[in-house]
Image 1 (cartoon, one colour):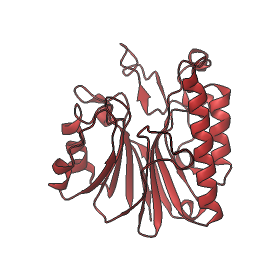
Image 2: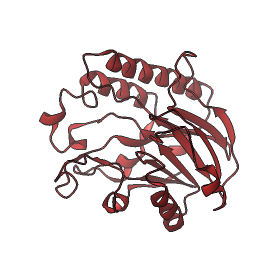
Image 3: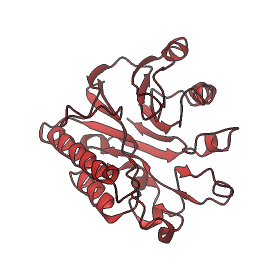
Length: 253
């Protein structure tokens, strides 16, 4: 099974990019984040033979599943806070496993409630994943976590040290999630620094590889045993009018 995660930074703006990517890579499941709008073009993907589901929000957030294989929707919001209306979470069941798509809060500026919300959201995520682990449910969780795990996941840690994406509080929350027994799929195969999933639109960031790694796949132990590969595909970041993120792909036997 080939699962891909991609923050497209507006599905309306990047629709042709997504269709091109599907045609070229043919994933079983494509998880999109940051749809940015109330309209999701499900028909465009269904015409290509994919089943879709999405949660959307006006102008912000939004996540979607685009799948060749049948699935059952389990959750369309992160459990733990029924008052949270942000469109950031989808959890499906397919082929006797859970596939989870997230778009975690950015958290900036750090001296505002946005950072508090980010940390609380990541804590809720940990609590839910802990329940899945206790229930022995195999799962793969992927998406834009908006957290830089380590210094080697950032082109210049000094630039990012006070940013919500790299603040120690954010990294501690991510570490607590990994400490549930999860595996960072990318780091199983790639230990070197300088491998990123996001490059700012500012001049020079992309060609100079001034990026950060904030898009991840974490696997429960059952799926870690079935992990075949995990890679970052930088190609779409070089396309005309690209997203500032690029896809991450995981293959599970």
